[in-house]
Image 1 (cartoon, rainbow, N blue to C red):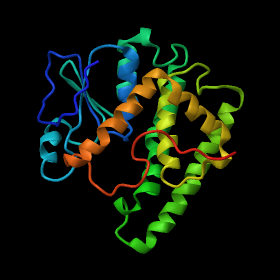
Image 2 (spheres, one colour):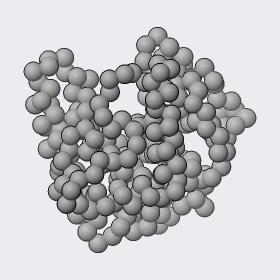
Image 3 (cartoon, rainbow, N blue to C red):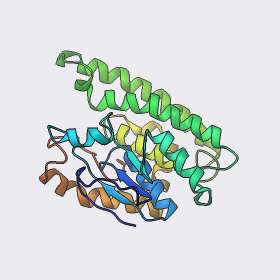
Image 4 (cartoon, rainbow, N blue to C red):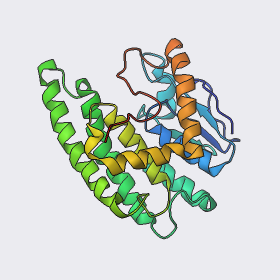
Length: 244
C-alpha cells in the first residue's frame, strides 16, 4: 500500500485507482480500513481542514469533510456510499456479506446519520451552540441517545461475535463509533459485549495497521498544523478500557 501524509495540494490523478483524503481519528478510519482489506495500491492524503488553507480542499470536496475518495478520477463522499462502491468493485474482499448487503447499508446509514451526530454533540457541543452554559445539557441529551444506541448494539451481539454473523467493514465502523463515544465521555461499563467487540476488531491485522498509522502520524500532523492543538483525549488510537 502507498500511504502519504501529505496535504490537499497533492492532487489526486485520474491515472491512480484510489486516493483517500482522510484525517487520523475521524470516521475516515473506516474507509482506510476498507482499502487495507482490498489489498490494492492506494494513496492517503491528509488535507488542510482548518483556516485559509482549507480552500484548496474545498475545490475537490465542497462539503469540506473527510473521507473523500477519488476513484479513477471520480469523487465519492460519505462513508456508506464509499463502502458500497468499494464492495461492488471488489466483491472478493468481502467488505460486506453478499447476502446481507441491504442490512449492512441499513446499519451504516444509521451509524452515519444518527449515532455519529450524537457523538459529535457529546464531544463538541460548541459546534452546535454558542452558549457555554448549555453545553452540559447538550452533552447529557447526546449521552442518553448514545446509551440507547449502544443498548441496541449490545443486544444484537448477544448471540454473535460480529454484527452480520461474520466480520465485515460494518464492524470497523462500529469500532470507530465506540472509540469516539467512549473517548468522549460515554460510560462503557454497561456494554460489555460492545467492549469485547471492540477488542476483537482492534486485533484484526488491517484494523491494527490503521490504528498504528494514526498513532504514528498524529503528533507530527499537529506540529505541521494539519490538526489543531487542544483536542480532547482519545483523538486517535485504541478504545478506552472499562473494568467489568
